[in-house]
Length: 43
Image (cartoon, rainbow, N blue to C red; front, side):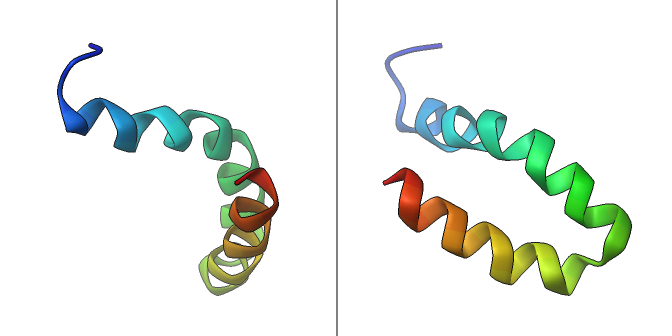
């Protein structure tokens, strides 16, 4: 799965999967803003 650009999308979606599911239970709007901040730190 390493060759197409599509592999890059699910790559950083994996590490965000655990935190996303946790925030999803509380609220999708919160996960959106929270995930953005976490993504910035990850980069």
